[in-house]
Image: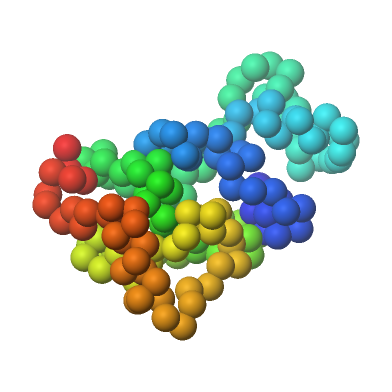
Length: 165
């Protein structure tokens, strides 16, 4: 059982520490065991809750993560383009820094995605705030958002083949 609250809010880990490919790949990436062991070979080395991590490290068998945000196979989603265009992790995944156990807070249904694609100015944030879990939109978000949409050359792709490939 992995606690984002402990690791993000408590320890201050950045999303990219575990999700290493989020800026360069369609997939954010699931952390390999050696990422966990970079800390847990030093701290909580005998904690029973971490035995699956230690066993994975000993045997070379990957950890079995439970996928919470699982899109249907017919949907294409690219994390890196959303990051590059200023869409924050919490926009889709919610306040993971407050989740002792990861849960899905948005439907991820097509209508939910289209809301953002049709009005990206409501959701876009400065690129240096994409990984911030405490970023709040300014009172003039629509004005700032319109500027960022232009600056980041955001194209509101709402045609079917943008996501259905």
